[in-house]
Amino acid sequence: MLDALYRHEAAWVRQDPDGTFRVGDPRPEVLLPGSFNPLHHGHTTLADMAAERLGSPVAFELSIANVDKPELAPKEVSRRLGQFLNRHAVYVSRAGTFRAKAAVFPGCTFVVGADTAARLVHPRYYGDDAAEMILTLDEIAAFGCSFFVGGRVDAAGRFLDVGGVAVPADYRDLFQGPGEREFRVDVSSTELRQRGPG
Image 1 (tube, rainbow, N blue to C red):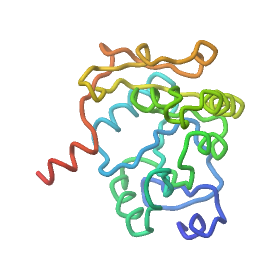
Image 2: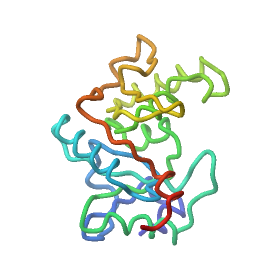
Image 3: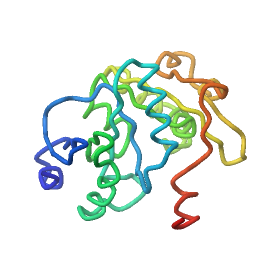
């Protein structure tokens, strides 16, 4: 079934918790995108918090495309999907940016860390082009998408939640999320990979 994605015959493929693959139904309402290398309790705890707050189950989304890295090989995608078996549904797409994700998953709420939200609203990540940033946010809003933001520790070691993200005034309605007292999990996939097994 993943072959349909690699052949550009499907916009997304869903893996159910039992390992069954499907295309076209059901469309997700809430997605937590990530590379999941590895999946960790920060992801799952944020998903649980978002599900409770939003009143909708949260599925995960893994993109085989990434703007900064080579496309994931099928074997690697299968390895990462194995972490979700008997646990969560996962949507696999080719959407490497949130602009692309909004087009593939219209009406969806994306669950993200505050570090990701901060990049979404910073011109630096659009080639220092503020107009391109605004255009991207406009397109995401036009697709009926929004963001549920969980707090993260930034590069300087400070905890950042949605209230600390410099969202332009016209787009504040696109971003919601808990404060530090409600949700704080200091873990990242990068740190776990650097630590190694055990």
